[in-house]
Image (tube, rainbow, N blue to C red; front, side):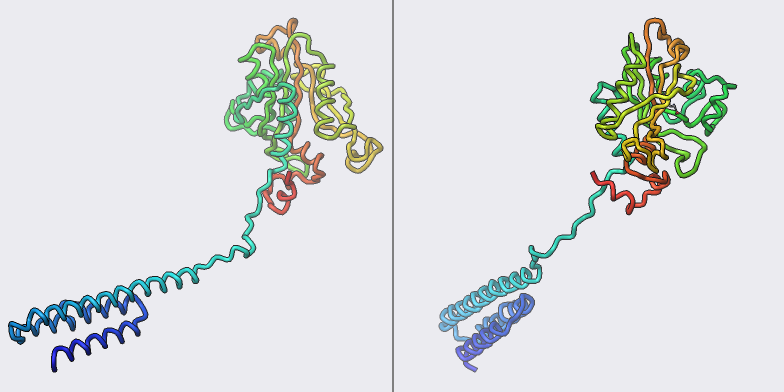
Length: 342
Ligand code: PHE
């Protein structure tokens, strides 16, 4: 067959193949078939040997031109295929911006945390500083220094978890009072939140619960200061119309000691289920710091006086949110917890 004939056939075949090619992969096959070392055009070039020398230059030109045309054709195909493939990829990856989003559920603060934060904000507004004492205490800080020596009957008020002869889980944040007074000269005005432990377990008691302790020591502090501060606190946490009253009580480390009631914020004092018909709800224990406690911390009780108060955070949360079982505060059930969004 004449060379020109062959060239024509190759060109036609290349054109046909280009029109049928569908992917970059088939393009690669075409390139090897036509332009590769053992490809159609190269084998034509090899035939040059059989051509008379004077015809070789012109045939060489013709073949080079053929190679160039086929290459250009393939290049065009390549860019067309790339474009198509990109379009296909884009259409497959299409994002529907109007589709409804997958909302992540919001977290909520635990009621204990809400109350603790609220208390901290109320008292820090009055100038209290936060002090956090250790949860593992020794007998001295938890009892003896709080005027509760070994054989004192008041120890029975708090069933204690002992870790060793002289190590225990603190039963009250009052232990922190001593740590503060030992290390700081008056004026002292601290708030001490934290976990406490007692061997006690029913609907309103838990072996682990949280308290918030307050301590103020300075010259001329009186029970009136305590009462005034508590009135302010009760209004802020339970509502503007709430009143407070003090009832005589007993704690070894305060003298006099009081139990603090607030007028029932549910019925306004008429008597209801929450206040058990009395019109009053007990919220915390307090008193004037016992002079023996001050003396033990090297603070002169003739120069300084002070008051202290301590409340259960769970108890305040239960009252404020109408929770009737303390266990709900410890079970971590999200159906319960998610109701307390701020
Ligand atoms: N620590 C006492 C208790 O746990 C509460 C209290 C604190 C009473 C401070 C008086 C003063 O019951």
